[in-house]
Image: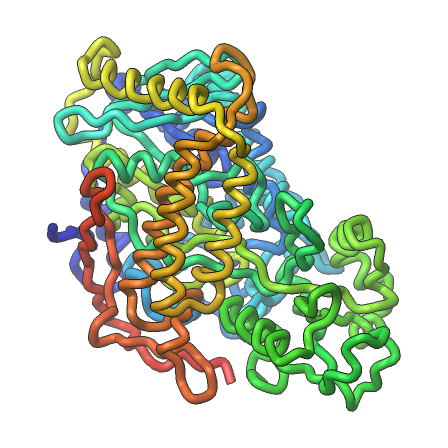
Length: 638
């Protein structure tokens, strides 16, 4: 199937302006005749619901948390990028665009990325107007700092809790619309499936988590803002509730899933400490502004207290390998470098899976009070988890799953190949290619919700006759019955293992064979093991309780059942993409010095997978990536 990106013609810098100038409009009096479903209340979902309601649409907003404020966006720490150039250090819309394209290893759509950089400047103004307490310098101007993959300071931040503050801003805008009656909020209500009528997305089927009630909702358009799928690896920095179910079930209803193998491993996370863990904790990339990453130069020093290892016996390997960017090399490169030194036997901490992030030099230069002012809550969190004081000894960090660049395929208008299904934020694939730069996730979520979707959704709805599909339509009844049957089946198995146990086993397979280093043999092994685990899941999972009330075990089993299928799709995509790029590193395709080796002749495209039915290999469609302004080059940060 040919994928139509719908990128407007004309010069790159004028495409978005041209789109807005030529878009179709709906009169204010008619907007109230349209209903839009928004699933998810993170930065993308909350900002989209608030913005669409402000325009006059009726909005139904859904989240499985008890409050929209508990969406996982709240966990983002370091900051949000914007091409404001307040520091007069050479930043511009073009430079942010170029850094993002290059950071993604030239595997993203040029027009979408330029638009993201273009609207980034509006996000900061919007958030300041909402009262978001961005850090300010002594004179009262907004402060910025650096993040990986950039040689300037464009990242706006709220100490180490930027996501929380931005989400509170979006939440207050959403709450205002709830109060006005423009948004109807459905907390503790999880999407189970997508309803497609006559080839268009027309609604969703949900389960009320406190009562177990299965209920359908109909709308003129559906917006998915449900985040990423890092938890397919079991251990990640994502909250336990984060899942792939909404996007994966939309995939099974006909939406294409793009580049699922593009997963990001964050280099600065607290290392795994044992099998008792259910998640991992991120240490913000912002710490690499002042922290220096190192390991002992000699294996004999690995067991020593870090403060006993002299300076000349330390290997500041990022500064050594990438002198132009040093400790702020991009995440994929920094993560592989950490794995490399640990594989060499120079890793620190339990199991040798850790490197040091050292603030001694920064404390000597700036003083402890200044470091505490910038990162105090992060240091406090680290001490609570590890019982170590990072002011007096280096932090121990190691890479972990953090973000997913893959997602449902969307065109320039953020609409999937299924008409009426829009996908925003981390749930789509569009902006980050094979590797996301730090502080760009918050930028994309708010750009999509506040400044892009309100235009593109209106443009599409203008050609649609208002009026939702009746809930007694046969397709609604069929999908609702299938969702109910799936729940009943999970409860009826009564096996020996919990969904959590089986999920952990899946996570071991994913991390071992589909993690930082991938190979043909390993991926083929992973696919076989995932199939075996899926078969075991559906014959041996134990889900206690009933479906008539709150049942956390049932919620988890329902989500894990999707991971058991999606994990195979992810591994298959990694197997078919026979190159290394960004976070997708195939050991067969690397340069002599161990860097990713792209194959632009054969893989300069988006892989969009089409569901072909149960137990059948999905169809791999492609969208060629065309670069009019930036020409793909060998990505170097040395």
